[in-house]
Length: 231
Image 1 (cartoon, rainbow, N blue to C red):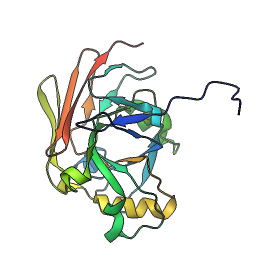
Image 2 (image 1 turned 180 degrees about the horizontal axis):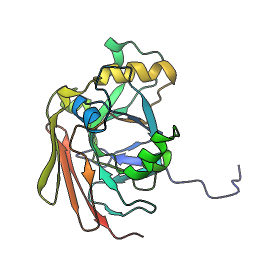
Image 3 (image 1 turned 60 degrees about the vertical axis):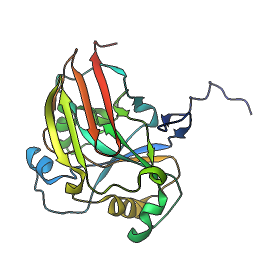
């Protein structure tokens, strides 16, 4: 087979404590999955069905990346998140079997052009330009569930230049990991290589060139990036 342009490289995430890598098919994100964050975004925190948006696989960048300040925004935000890596295909997955489909977990930062996101939201348009831009998904090395189990609680936090901005517990997720996997699989066929970013707690805010952003989840890992000048 001859391709008319060179095929893109396979996006992947490092697996902790070794040389293995997890190939990424797509990135599925859950919106407003902590009550306090829903409130700070001006929304009702009532437990409504979860909603989803996506990022391209090649938006993923590793721990330690210098992320260029993105174009077309003056309000660039961080959002710390628990990341779930799907290791087995499934459709209409029962909630009580959902964790059987999880390969492992990581720490992610959902970088957001907040001004573009809110402008799109207010006009009833898709969020893509506010969420799905280059380098918008820093993700730490994955920790396999075979090694750490399936964490349902643990501190999740993020700091900017050493000052803690987000501090919560993944037990506070409105929709748990098994519920998210089960609900998502009713609408799409989840495939090995899919990655789910499960939502952020309260405390989101702006970052600028020169900022060092660090975060972590107990029992899973840590991540750190710096914000570099626009490329």
